Image (tube, rainbow, N blue to C red; front, top):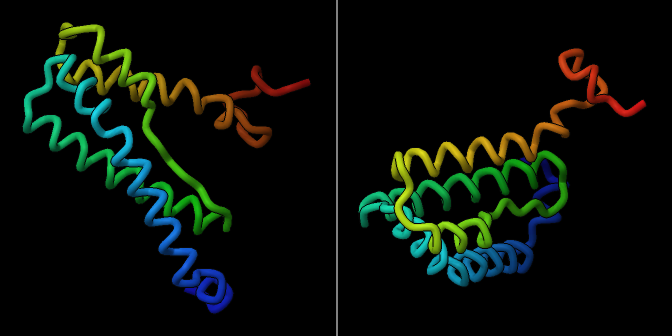
Amino acid sequence: MDSALRAEASVQAVAAGVTAALLGYASSVAVVVAGLTGVGASQRQVGSALLALGLAMGLLSLVGSLRYRIPVSVVWSTPGLALLATVGPVEGGLPAVVGAFLLAGALCCSPAWCGRSSPACSGCRPR
């Protein structure tokens, strides 16, 4: 960690970030649990999913913040999980739901991957 980053990362800034992350996580975790159990996930699968989501969101937020030197927050889709809570069991179970969310996420990010330097996305470049 370079000295400029250490100077910017005060105890107050880190504490504010941790507090915001914990409150954001805790405020919607009930919706996540309801959504996962609504599609047929077991208690173990729900626990594993919460752990994986928490670690992935934390790691991606940290990497993004360090890379771009601005606060970056990676969060889950609370409305999407609320929808899952009302849908009921899905054919294919939790693996099908995870695959659908990954595909939706990739589709949402695909315009960013079609930047000016990507020859594979020459058709989607703005003219």
